Length: 192
View 1 (cartoon, one colour):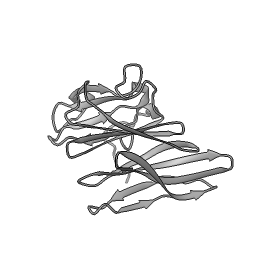
View 2 (cartoon, one colour):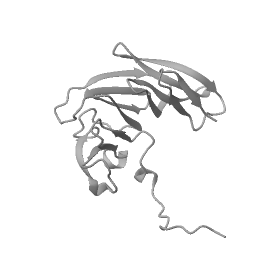
View 3 (cartoon, helix red, strand yellow):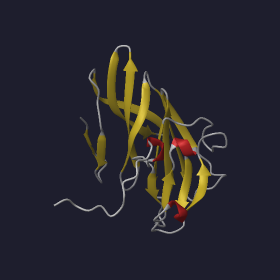
View 4 (spheres, rainbow, N blue to C red):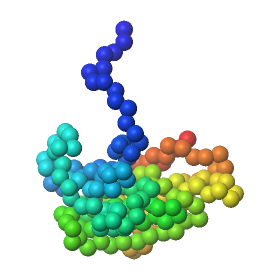
């Protein structure tokens, strides 16, 4: 017997999908939602702690694009996180990975603490890993063409600057990396 589906499956373009690192909860229980690049990466905040549709959100900030608070360019990948009263956004464009933090609540005049790191190859943010007290690491995937190789690593924020730690490298590709941060700050990472 086949299971019935209560709703029709509607194909969506990749630009319409909410990414892995696109949501975060504020200390007061509201949800932050980072829209995809096709939507200028606007940051929305829920009006309640139980949003159901996009109608339950209001605009908070435009982070990227012409009127962006952080950068005029639209990133290739981005992610957000909240730890305590701090909001973290990390994004990549080509060979550059950037992080910015600010205090909550977010507002157009928020002051940002920014840092960046250059890589040899194109870099994509895979996941932001956090513990209960600190943003611990940004899991990244770097691809280089000459010689062709792919690597996974974590970017750590140490004394206000970013430091990359390469974890593995392959000439065959590395796929679907995911991580988990334990309360003591140690990380478990898996990939195929």
